[in-house]
Amino acid sequence: MWATDNKFLNGPFQPWTEESDGFDLEVIGKIPEDIAGALFRISANPKFQPRNTDRYHWWEGDGMVAAVYVREGKAAFRTRWVETDSFKVEVEQGEAVYSGFVNGGTPGALPDGAPRGKNVANTNVGIFDDHLLVYFEGGLPSQMNPDTLETYGTWDFHGGIDVLCTAHYKIDPATGDMLFFAATGPIITWYRADVKTGKIMDSHRFEVGVPVMMHDFVVSENYAIFFVSPSTLRMDLVAQGRPGVVWDEKALPHGTQIVMMDRRTHEVKWYEANGMFAPTHFFNAYEIGDEVVIDVHRISRLGNPAGSNTPLSSHEWFPPAIPWQWKVNTRTGKVSDKMVSGIAGEFPKINDAYVGRAHRYGYFVTTRGLSEDTMTDGLARHDYLLDSTTVVEGPVGLTNPSEPVFVARPDSKTEDDGYILSIWWNRETSLSEMLIHDAAELHRTPLAQIKLPARIPFGFHGSWAEQDVLEKSIATLALEHSPLT
Image (cartoon, rainbow, N blue to C red; front, side, top):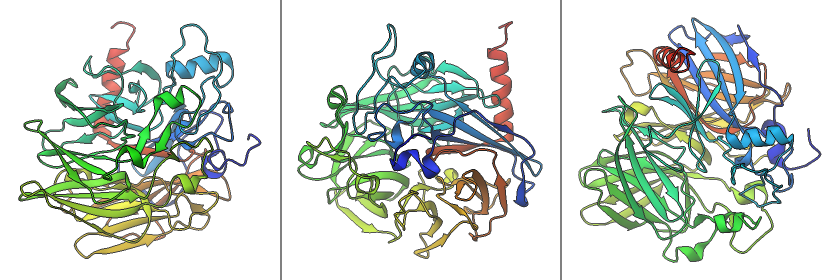
């Protein structure tokens, strides 16, 4: 598309230049009749050639939402860009204006009134408070129509947040409330949004001492748990056109820290995590008596070396992450850790009904091969009870699977009674396909292989919306945005 050997602009990352629709899609196998709803995925899909193609990073592409609608054994498809204010500025200019924040770059001249920074809206997407919300940690979430994917502007939880929030929210299974946070420099702000009103019902602010690049967190029944690592976000360097995601071990001479906030009292306690590393994404956390168990993927470093202006290659910048487990005794302060599986991978997920309580199964995509053109190469299921990991690769031609999403069967009785949905890249067609696997028994041949009419550039996160949730959201937004309202 553009003359560059930058991995993040080629292969499964290569931008898709148009918004797409498809109906009654071709299916190999059979879509289970008890799946009805929509899989929403976000991708990093730059509309215009980046100003510095050699420095462009996967994290910086314009957000494009892809929706795969499934019902009665059939599937339909739609994609739309998230039309943030900064996206509209570049459309009006007919070219990229904003430079990158990960590896630095040369910004263009901003027109009068344009946002100073770019909200790329490219990190996560899901329905809450009857709105399809798209998240990016450099700005407010954007709201979209889950049917048409029309963008309606930013969303601030009815005035409850002001600048930004994490893309990684958790839904409390006991209440349905959304649990999330905002990281602005060295300040972390905790939030709980009420499921019935969408309003912020609880918040607490505390300082961690370094401008940590904090992307994910996890909750147990009583705690919100954050890892403070040497991966920092330096907005002062971004303003100079220099790499802004910096691996700075001097910022944390004692190594990575575990910070736990009591959700009942807001008391914050710190624990040594026993090493210099960064978390990528968490599976889950839960409590057994005084002990908190934390399951996460651990990476040896994340970001450009402090003081360097030369971007690293993709696998130097983001080496393989390994499933790991920590146990923190909140009474004695003792911390122990161990490697859970030697199979490298990323984007860990569980059955979300088990958020904050003991889970047996974890799902993730593998990063075993370190291929020059892909990021991932298989789908894995780890059984914590049997201490075993099952790995399957895709059908012939398919690789680079997305984050897996668990969908429970109606009236499911067991933790793994459901399906795993994921998006794969077809090397032969350069298009994407959605696979549906049985979550209890992973096989290379999925239950269904849905041919999509477009490529979904490799992105980050997504979610499933059941049909009743989807229909309620569509009805609510139709009323909100009716010309008569």
